[in-house]
Length: 104
Image (tube, rainbow, N blue to C red; front, side, top):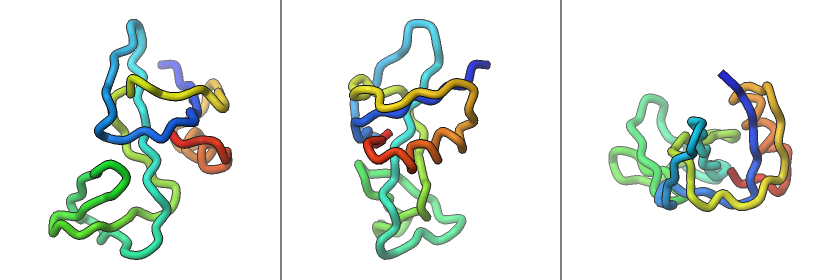
């Protein structure tokens, strides 16, 4: 299993068009906004609407900092702002958080 991290400048959404890669099983990770107000209750069933997270009661909430949601590869990723090989998912998320131009 190859583990690589490709930070992109485009802000991916859950509604963005998907595409398949010809050879590899790439994924896109949608960057969830930093928590400003209502933190989602632990164990709550959530769904992602564009950039907002909605709990099962229909109330908008947010996850703690450094949160990403996996989805299929988006068709328009934007340009790469950084790439690293042999990193874990957690390391890749941290790299994105520390790279100002990273949006997905």
